[in-house]
Amino acid sequence: MRKDSLRQLYVDELKDLYSAETQMVKTLPKLARASSNAQLRQAFENHLRETSEQVSRLEQIFDMLEEKPTGRKCLGMDGLVKESSETVQGAYGDSVMDAALIGAAQRVEHYEIAGYGTVRAFAELLGENEHASLIAQTLEEEKQADQTLTRLAEQINAQASLVAEETKESANKSAARRAA
Image 1 (spheres, rainbow, N blue to C red):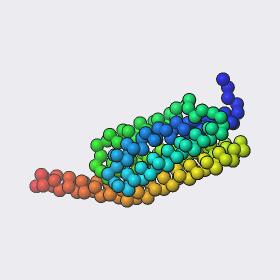
Image 2 (cartoon, rainbow, N blue to C red):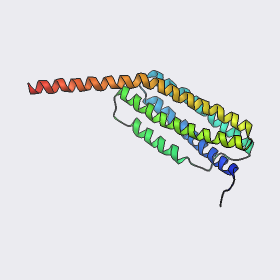
Image 3 (cartoon, rainbow, N blue to C red):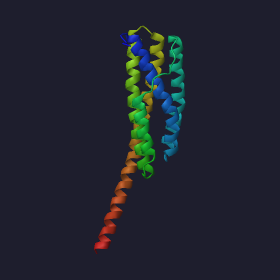
Image 4 (cartoon, rainbow, N blue to C red):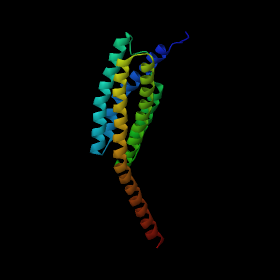
């Protein structure tokens, strides 16, 4: 069946976001458990609570639209979730693992920011001002989560870099001793 209306595209995109957010409700606890940095763990736990509220906001929009939120799997988020699972299973040291988790989480945030920006624009064009307001709230939360991750990355990436330098120095000293 051909879909010619912006409203149908809007509903389809909302379903995609709903699927994405429900996938993240399952993934964020895994990221939190894999974090060695307490601030990063707390950021993941805080965003889990926000994500649950975001799911509720989407359900509220679907109620207003008299639509069901199910029926579409977000393949983009599915791929990002698989990548983050591979990251969690990686054999990285603590600060390097935390840096990797931040990278995985920021890819998710940027994906969500793009999706929410698009549906907010659709809602505005369709005259769905109440929807647009709810979506804008979620969009702002996603941007804040990304900013929090960026701030944490400045500290954690520096720690990961120091670990790499210390490892390199140690390896060089060991090689020099063996050569002597």
